[in-house]
Amino acid sequence: MLIIDAQKDFHLGGSLAIPTANEDAARIAALLKNHADKFDRVFATLDSHQKLHIGNPCFWIEKATGKNPSPFTIISAQDLREGKYAQHPGLRLPSNLSEVLDPQIFQGREKVLKGDAVTLDLPKYCLEYAERLEAKGRFQINIWPEHCLIGTEGHALVEPIQESISYWSSLTGGSVNWVLKGQNLLTEMYSAFEADVPVSKETALNTHVLQSLLQGCDQLVVCGQAMSHCVNYTLRDIVANWPNDRLSQIVLLTDGASAVPGFESAAEQFQADMKALGVQLKTAAEVFEG
Image (cartoon, rainbow, N blue to C red):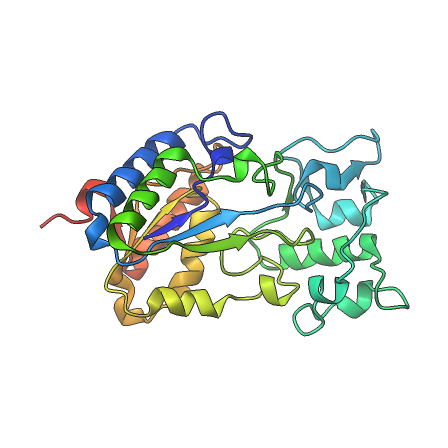
């Protein structure tokens, strides 16, 4: 089982709550607990952000108002060319900038570093980032409510799923394979396996975990939040790296994930795309039928 971002901030009472996430979590937890002996391995991803992340309001200043942009504001590359937004004036970047922007991964690094090769020209970087993001045709910079900040309660797994994987671990002797994503404050990472704009080894395609999922797998059940975003793009990366003749081994749990409100069409298109490729779409009750 691969449980994607089943964290408190995406559930009722969280900062980016999805209205039906609690019901999804209950079905996931019951599936894992009731069939614990049938799951050899459990992987769980955790969205893991710093406060001053490029997708958070406090990273940006709207020049017209001098305020941080509201959640769900879209910042386009054209907005940055026109100077509508600036970055947090006191933003202190990590000292290991050579790792945060690895020259072997982020080929535009030479455009945005100042002379001493350790100081980032942040406005140039953000424009480069926005242009690359838009060139992929999936996203523009989206400002989200602060969510899944490392060390906060919202970063933790929601209780029913935490309890079910603890039960699974005790029963089977297995340990959860944890996969953290989103720690790099200069790029967004919807997929658990690769950032939308890879800038470092940690945000480039994680072939190690992908191969680990594939190895010895007869069936992979994918669930979590959200169907429109992180489940969507995580599974797309899995499918792109899974043998075509084995795609029917993958099960997308249709009642174990929901769309972020307003993004329902993206979730519907994702499910249609997966079905067309041979991924199985099942409810929790159908996974072990027969």
